[in-house]
Image (spheres, rainbow, N blue to C red):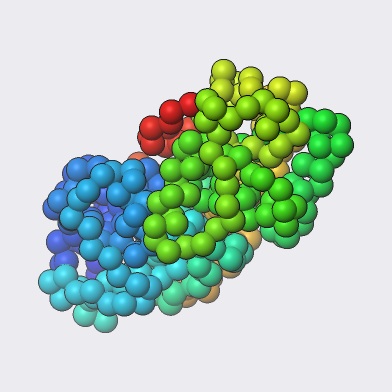
Length: 341
């Protein structure tokens, strides 16, 4: 097996096709797995992405040379066949499949294995080499079923309302927030959102995706209107003056990191919900096995642990250092879009 992708200081580079995947330095041609800021950066001359990803990139990066494709729609660059396949991480997120002279590599980007109904269902793709994330690549990370977590969130909100408290739920503005909104829709109550989430909702709507309606919190939104209400905000809003208007309120945080009880205390939260847009330990292992890959490269997260485990199980694996990772713990990306409040 050759080396269809090289690991360079600019990112994952395909010499045969002369393009990069999710580069972290400006390049001529970038193939983008998804619109989170650690994977889709400003400064490239050309972006190839899924159709759903383009309006989100426009909202975050402005106008650029974007080309879009549907899932499993092939594009050729210098003879390298490129196709995008659902990664299940966020809306538009894609695995990148490369094929050249009979050799197949797949870059997973970020992915989760349980179908959330809005991001596309992740399907393992047979390949010779697989590049996997490892954000939650430790055995302690095993998720409850999504339906059970959604039910926990709704019960918490209902309890807060019985206690005359507003429920402020913290979640990443792109991906997590849309899942929280979906979880709360059955309550059939107004859902208020922070401006960063509102901006993402508008970008997603412009891609033709229909999500439950939300109301933007503005300076004109009255305290009476917000009393006992449901509010969704990014982590950048935690402990900020913006939160004071909701008093009395309770804070719940949605993140895979909530699996570790101490993180609830560190967030000074009243509740933690282990809701992640990444695969858990078993999801990573089952996905890797299903690809049948001869070589597995592990990046961003607990890569040393996962790579060592794979080698012990007889699957050739190596760690790869990249500049991806951490959007669940990175509030920076949630402040990229201007917020008026």
